[in-house]
Image (cartoon, rainbow, N blue to C red; front, side):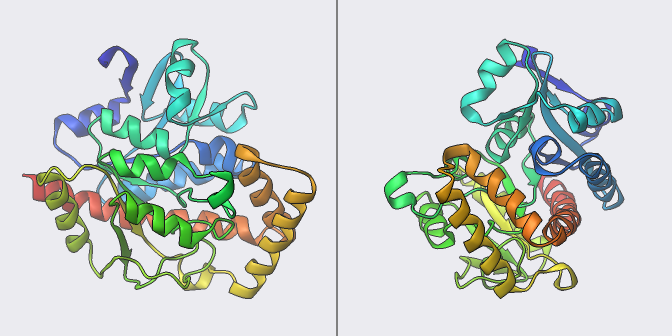
Length: 305
């Protein structure tokens, strides 16, 4: 196992000294945003985590290794490269064996974080059950990973291009707790609210950290969703974003776009139809998640001692 994992010096030192570490995905860099915004955002997220008392570990696949923490040059390379595969659970072994470059999705980042002994992970939003999933079975591997991997995911809920009701049903079936951070309802990524209540509300990071520690102390396998709404000033108007998503979904259907191509197409279309406002919102919610995630990690690490 160890021959496949390389810890960056900052991460290795943090682990040795018992400092809190926060995992970050790399798909947001390679497939989520255009260059140079992707690299600038990644660096700022890392800095926010440091400023809040934890150590960032951006995870990616490179040179036959799972890299836990990327150097500045590696971040830049991932931000500029066009030949980076999107890596989920099914892709990890092949990409490592063939020494190809892979940007980790939520699912793959969770796996790699757990292998490296990291329990807290900050991202933008989780994947979920796509609209029509009851017939297509188009359900993100993120949900299955949350059911079996002991990593908490701090996110702004799931994107409203998905079927949020089905997503919550799936998580319930798998026993994954959805904890609303200072909210009673699941945030829908670009907007602060949806019609779906969360399982539990936590108004402080202590409650979140204590819940996570207790869950894993009891050997209750699997992760947790910590749903942290986008800050009010950066949220988008609900009706506007709903209309935009409906338009984008219709176009995807007309163009017969399916499978893993759906999400990138829809997000690109949403960005285009909102005049770039959705990308700004995306960046701001990730920054906000980084603050909350780092504070949870600090508290969680303190409780383990």
